[in-house]
Length: 172
Length: 98
Image 1: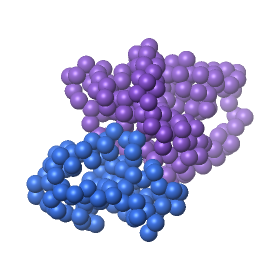
Image 2: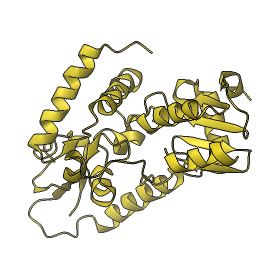
Image 3: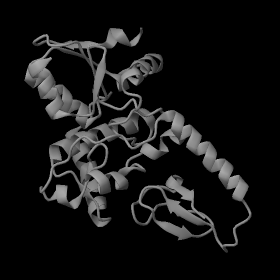
Image 4: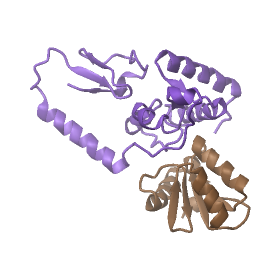
């Protein structure tokens, strides 16, 4: 693994911080800890071609890892329940203000077997329901932040949390 | 066992057999390594993200035995139980009593 320069880390950290704050999120106030995670994200980008969660082992197959590309599908629920995401790059306002501290939390991502099963069920369900909807347009849901929109295709970038189109699922 | 040749040893007081599975990119894994070192206990570790595919799968298979979610860090104690995540109190207790 190439040594990632402090300059690269600071630059990416700055972008994350700005995006987080403009979207109503907070980065971990322990900047040393947060920057180590940013270093991990850069390392994963170089290894796999995408910024998968530094605290989870990626498969290297993008389709299987979509749910753990930062920000992961589990971030918002974890911040709600524990005050921090799994790796603790993102935290709640309370933790950001230093009223509480972030800790190691349980893994919310289902185990591999379960994920496979859920995916099959979802696909089968969609086929069974296909064509029965009377909506004029399909409704797409951002799996990261829950943003919903009714249009022929999901947007290229989620206007709320800035993740890419491939993180959307058909909701209705 | 292919991954075993990548296991590294950190010297210290021999308390129990401690085998730690980590990712080099993970903040909680780094904190766990640092605390174990500070507590001065002997432990072994392997950075699973640096292993080749086959060794990676082997290491995950062993981890799954103690931690079905296969999450990081996983600390296997005396081949009987595991501590998952960075658990400061449990690690300190381990250093005191184990």
